Length: 280
Image (tube, rainbow, N blue to C red; front, side, top):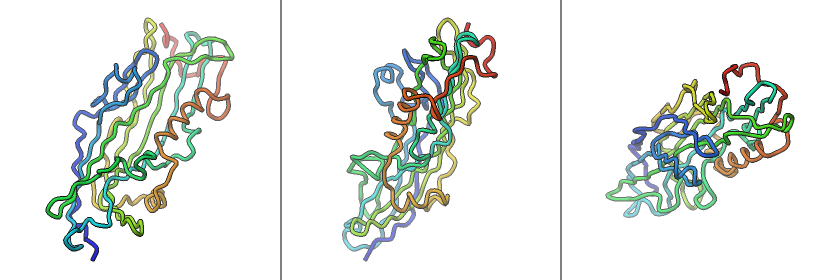
């Protein structure tokens, strides 16, 4: 007799999570404040958790060991809505650069996992069972790192970060998988967004972020059951690579370091919306 998974609940912990921009030594970091340390980021280390969630449910029935033959945890899907960076010279005649790293993604919607834990967000052990109740945990801290400056090959001068857009949607899904059939049961989910849309002015050789025009961090939904969006259903039914973090890292490298084209374009003059006091 298979267990019935009842009364699934999610308890998110996002206290202190807010969309934030911090210039570093060679890069500018876009993050969620909580769990972020600039020294660690400059050294290439990962930030601490910003958005955490605890999921729990009752495994009713299924005999004396209702978890036998099952695996539990969180599966996360992530969609890159926008990923763009724009650079400008100190003067209009020093040119500008547009980097559309969104175009270098193999797909906008991907499984958010890694090879050592796929399709889950965490390596085992992913759950604890006591008195018929199962508890699982997951956490994340979406970040983006952009170089402070890029070389404009048309003008043979450095261009400086002027505008960055990073908008992502997340579905963090509490899931039970039958180990024999691999059938998936999606018990509850969070839906959330991170949206940076930031322009910069440069003063004394340093980037100064202006107030973001993005939505920031938003928890959009916390409900039982599977996400209803049609675009998610195939990936929810069979969550397979490519995975979001490796794919987005490769997309950034390809867009920033690759040849000019759909991912990167260079101009001999400023974009029309660069203000005259951009660099002072």
